[in-house]
Length: 432
Image 1 (cartoon, helix red, strand yellow):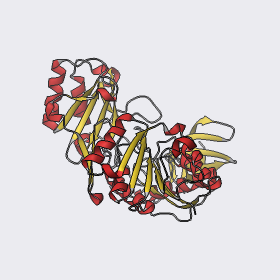
Image 2 (cartoon, rainbow, N blue to C red):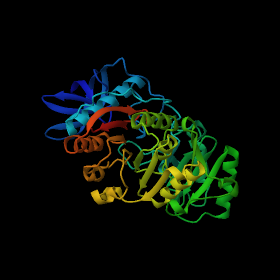
Image 3 (tube, helix red, strand yellow):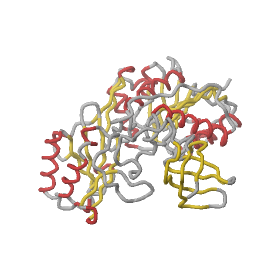
Image 4 (cartoon, helix red, strand yellow):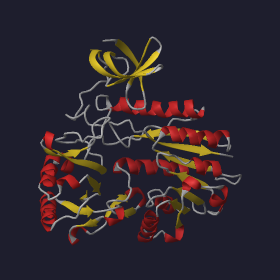
């Protein structure tokens, strides 16, 4: 089998080597390593391969904490030192900005980092009944597969859940419909854990009893979701209270339902909000837009700083949640929220938001290309862009700088998903 020396890592954490001018993307290989590899996909300009044997290792290689690493698709970088993971993500951000946007930030912000284990306070855990594997499986999908990995534990989940995957397997196996429970959604706040069971057929009375007994034993709230997210409901009145997370630096408490979108990593979310507020610098008397505002994660800190915030979100349910959170925190007079499809933003729709001094944008992976293209001559002088996809950030940044007259003052990563190739980042754009 061929041997190659790895020169870099790509955005998925694969080692990149060159053999006779062709790029070889090698899963499991790290920078500087000499590896023997086997290609499973060959194209004229590149090959995709797996590492067969480590000939010469890297000092940055560590022993993965999870026994399922390499099979489970949830993590791709557990074999790389934590600090090196951050360096790789920063490099991915900078490479995307340069190669896709022809941009270099004037400043690189220090990486936002925190706990690297037990951090996933939100997750969708797959469930599958597979007789050939001994019954019900509960876990994340296998790498590059629709199959559920045969997992016994997961160290990136809170230990109360991650160490009890086998108990969850037994729980589902004992229900009347184990083959009709495709997913368990995990939602955690600072005091409680809720499991939402997606059931494709009605649960029997015995099923409900079994689930509630498990919940009482483990200290979990137990919910059922027979249809879309709006159908999710607690199986007991004792579990009917809303979840909530706090932002102590801003004196805020934000309520949410288990199926609402919230950030996965609570600790990193707090630090990301702090960084974003430092860059945005909201002040009394300013009018600031928060686009893709969700339930008010950034909106309410902006309002707490004394500025008036205009939040826009595509989901009516999240708009209602943001309004409720503003009211609960005494910020209704400094905020307003609107439901609108920002992927169809136009100059006219942005103008209806009124004169804006500043803007924060926190879009999904697709980015905010319609928004940045719709910015007119009276666009805000400062934009903080929080991104979960460096390629869409780079595309949008190119429009902001090359077409709209902004400068890219700085950018940096936030390690929202340790041990994965996911790159969360924040960037500041300023115009005179």
